[in-house]
Length: 82
Image (cartoon, rainbow, N blue to C red; front, side):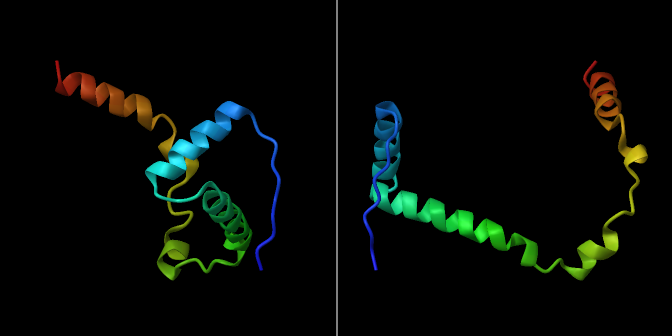
């Protein structure tokens, strides 16, 4: 059953949303419905089963082992492209 919903939004946001919907060949109502549907799906993420391989690999690398990797990689790139 469809029910009407009234929203108050900034006019520029509405115009942007209409352009977005038009590019995707959807109605603005459909975009909002899809967005709300996605929100309710996010609530079910806690129920998602974690793959056994991911469980097995979780925690193998300690956080202290990867600290500073960005600077190490930056140094590597500097040397490589000198």
